[in-house]
Length: 538
Ligand SMILES: O=c1[nH]cnc2c1ncn2[C@@H]1O[C@H](CO)[C@@H](O)[C@H]1O
Image 1 (cartoon, rainbow, N blue to C red):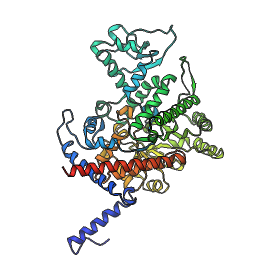
Image 2 (cartoon, protein in one colour):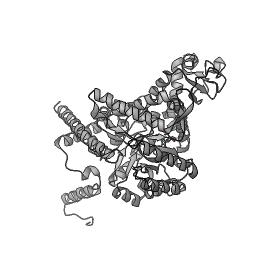
Image 3 (cartoon, protein in one colour):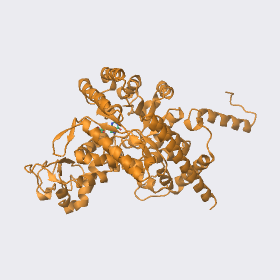
């Protein structure tokens, strides 16, 4: 490059423009074929709307939100996000595939509570009698109980003499909830706060990665007693898939948490094995295909597959049982099992390198059996720099992971960025999750633009939408687009296409998903382009 002397300001400006284009040349929205007219107009309109709402919405004062800004802490800014026109338009966007979410965290907490209330055999208990000083911290626990000799009472409240730990039928517990604690609505609030993370926890009382993870893990314990029960599980899966479909997602690939070997059956016995979980999943997916076809909506849903997941608390010997179980399930349900993963709070979990012998053995067995069952690993969900959690990225890549879950610390590793770009390893980026779980204080500090600018393939994912109250992908898409000047609608489109390409659906389904996406996208940008024109003429 020439030194800092230029013959004219014009020459300088031309050099500046060239430098910017070179700097952005790896980005997928710069490398793609030229935009159609509608795409260009839609992109323009969205950029204009974003700039306008940055002032009119984010620049205005809001009661209860002292410092609003685009991409701010989601749990504080959510109500503002949802009132923007940009959010409403993004809601209609065809999103492609959802590649990173945990099945047990994908149904709206209110819907989950409703599912429990529809089953009077579900009982609830609290670890201390509820009174105003502990209702925020005492956790509910759920379980179906049939036997009439179980010791049950009629309230979980201290005022009714509740004994900590005894089971109460859920409907009774709700009806008898102390008026001083809000009555039945107070009960709902108590349960919802056990299933979700609220702003004051994330940004105040639990404002460190370790503390927020404690709260986060507790939410799964609350949900599990409701979800892992056969009559509810099927309804739960359907609610989960529908929540995605309603948000324009046409294929879903959730992690299913298989650490518990059994779930509770219709008779209250905890003896239903993983094979039956998958049978239920298969039945729901088939039923949904038929139902949507009847409504003429078959284009909206291509299908769903599951990634087997267990926690990084296991010993390598224990892990071996699960990898074998996963292989057996793949043989029985080749069209459902998509891969294998290890999950949990990365900073305090067993490092991947401890599992290397077991995972290499798994890979070899999968290969010798001719199965399509790759590792799709979480890695780099940390702020560490060179410590064990950060170094999990090396192991994930060497172990042949097809995608990386989170990869938050990947931006620190130039060689790994290159390997991901050239080796076509897609990063499943979960913006709101990373912010709520305190890896970043807001979206402008998130490393996503570093990945995008290096030309690494990325899919935006929701991770645990129940816990943050962000069903579908629109909230995450909003946070991404609102906090960048470069990334616009076209980049969101490129990421949606990549989510299809890097999914584990069959080749046939991929072709169908891409064809449908292209059609829906063309209609979507056309609508935005004409909205843009009508706004201009006003
Ligand atoms: O963002 C995440 N990173 C790692 N593990 C997670 C994340 N979200 C949920 N889980 C883990 O998945 C299991 C439930 O399916 C939970 O054990 C939770 O720890």
